Image 1 (tube, chains in turn green, orange):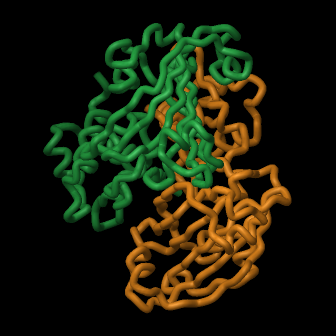
Image 2: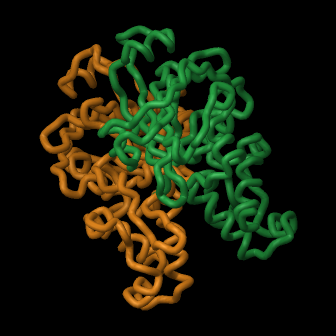
Image 3: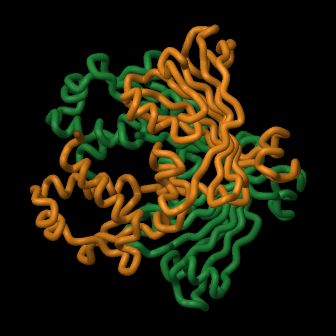
Length: 234
Length: 234
């Protein structure tokens, strides 16, 4: 599955995240990649183009390709939709499921989820914990017509893995709105913070690749630990 | 300047931001774009691929190409490095220059700027105002070996326009670290907020396309107005 250049992109991304280039920050040359993957130079150039636009690498005329250092420092990346587990491959991630229930979408939620008022939705509250520290409180709604079943075991592990690998749905893209806000009481208590502490909020609307909304969520992050990384290109 | 597909990407981006597709959210077909721009289908596909990866559009098999709605709502985009003026084409943007001075980089700053300790740097403090509301306080350092001259007039207009159009430097990419924090006294006072209000902070390290750091900055945003948008793709 996936085009050859896409597999090469994923393979090089994995090498970067796993620290293969930490010492020199220099990637193999185009010629070396052609030899390694046994593909055409066009395919390698396509993969390199994507890695550049994603912000993983940059090219210096005459000197070669280099890894952008920020990618190596353990922030939450805004580049992918793959979740905390993939952003922090070396860290201990766990989730405490606070509640799961089925609700009927009222007007405001239905508008956000682009579904009919009264549609059944799962409402999941999870506390995410990274290396023993409370990291975020997630309040998520899933359209039950798209995600027909959810339970605590699934929510405790990875909902995204369940959606892609068990339900075989094709996740397409997500809109994330990021802002600072005052702390709300429930998140404050569960994160173990003070009401005077600031909150880093991410509102997420996630779409299948046919444009249907399957998830609308709000995550309130512990400001002590949550730092987001965005790699921008001019 | 710029490849043909790059010009098409910029042209379609402009149409999207200017609201050309607000009513239907549907883009022209590949055939229509081939006819409009008088280029090959390969060139159009290349442009469409880039617009998809940048998060501007999505494709639905059999139905066509659509604009992602979040792009239309006036958030600060994390996709580009072009500054507030381009993110808010319809809004009134101004800057108040609080101070400009030349300093010698001490150890911590020199490490961030990848320059020698003692290198001369411009230190610029600016208050950004959007539609009459205080939007952010920016604290920025520029390496004087790269940006040899800055003054209040330039800082009041657009430093990025000066760097690219007057100094003819090639801006390459930037690492942005985003987090929430407690308010500091200076930003609080200049933004007209309370010390108990949360701050949305963006730390920015900006590079020329040869990998040299020309800017290190910290922007403290007014949580009432600053909402960032990230369009993510799976």
